[in-house]
Image (cartoon, rainbow, N blue to C red; front, side):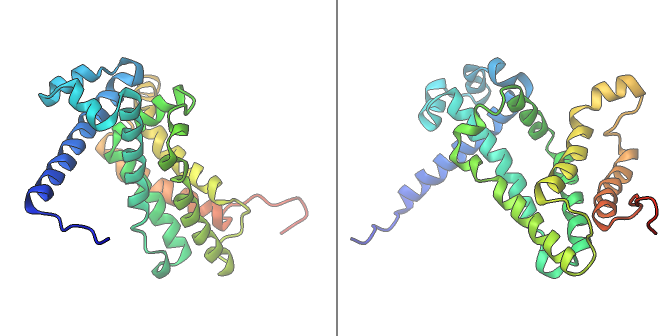
Length: 226
């Protein structure tokens, strides 16, 4: 049976529903990032949207489902940004440097994402594991890096045995720490990690760190070997 064409009225309702859902997710992400999963209140989110808790539950079912949807949205945005890298037309060294810098830029611009990751780690990924969407979202990142590493080794540019997860961890760790630990680091060392005067240097650092490691620059050699 052929599907019925969408009438302007039904199309308008669909757009309204999508817009409402997006607005709920936007508010919810901010509130979960600010207060944590336990501290965030759905009725307060509803008040900020000038709607009702019942309406939010209509779209998402409950607080946990809303939180999981927020996580799915946040992680999907990272994967979408990574997918913009044109691996086929970049040399491996430039591709991995671009990925490192892109991750740095994304984390710098989406600090609520960093907070959400920290919150979910406090919960030992309890909610993340319940999402079928999130269970598959690591594969694109690992696949992209594996493709770059394979090309780099084939070209003789990359000489280390690091796998895709190792490299992803290396890039993420630097980019994440700079945001997640900015306050404690500032209190201990008197340096504001996210201050504009440090940004370009830090961005270059992560790119060059990854490239240097993969290409073996400065690699320690065993005694007796040149």
